[in-house]
Length: 168
Image (cartoon, rainbow, N blue to C red; front, side, top):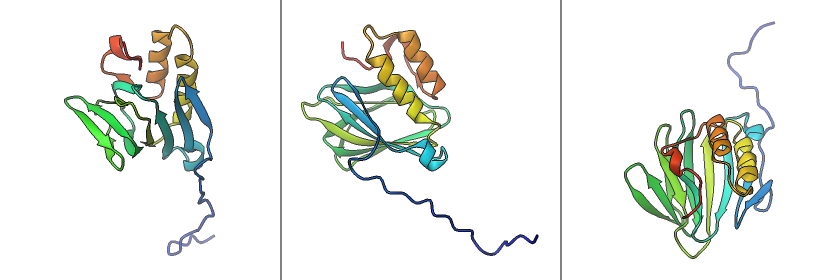
């Protein structure tokens, strides 16, 4: 059998995710919705819509070894923290945290913040969010279990004594 090196083999794999489509989870007054999952993208890309309630924390300062994370602010003002700076990202802003770049994010306002969170590669990130839903809805929050979940899904807190996304 002769291999054809000159013509592309086309596939019918394009998809459309509608605004109200996707698996949704709630943690307190915050929510996340799976838009484009690891299953859709063969683990190459994950897109998740996050809604942060007023004065809530998405994640404290952490980094990833094997994936990049991009934040696209759709509504509100997101506080985006890096190793050395705290920045205010308004609607339309894009923040990018490549591998080994400490970052965190939160809502420091009295208005809801909506953002798209994109992981490349996605590395089955849905498992992380499902685990987060379970751990952060328990009282009290088990820090050891939280750290184990974080590390399993390529997330490493900069300060393990201050990693749980709650305000004191």
